[in-house]
Image (cartoon, rainbow, N blue to C red; front, side):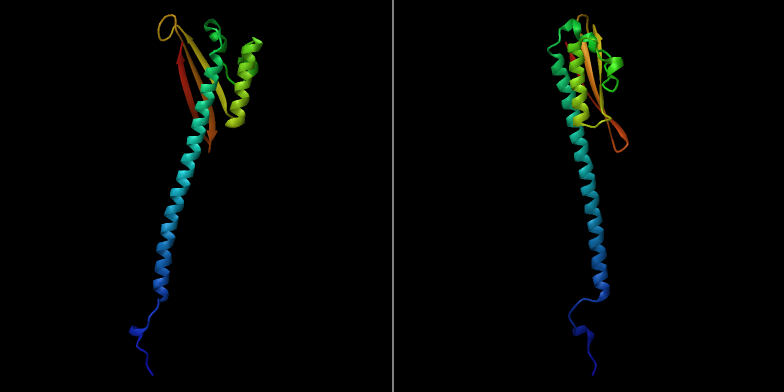
Length: 148
């Protein structure tokens, strides 16, 4: 008795392997997209946090008298002993900011402040606040500038 294969219904092994190969390629593409999206979301969160930390420091400086702003020039939170102001009130502002940076971003993250007097015009002071952090072996930064 001979069986006519054309009348048989079902899938051959070759058809199953081709279908699985196509499915595997689609899944690899989706995994790449999900991985890239996850990385972008993490970077966005870090940048948002760093910008918020810079903004927080500028708000803390809002209570500082105009003439005292130069006390904060060249502050580097990773070097509190050498760069923080000697005035206890200003030192506390910098210390609180350092703790926030290390708690919210990472232990290696740090902030710096640049205070430029008579810039951009005479009688004005420009305060630039930077926040630096590392993610995946790459150094990142965010900064805000305020003119008073």
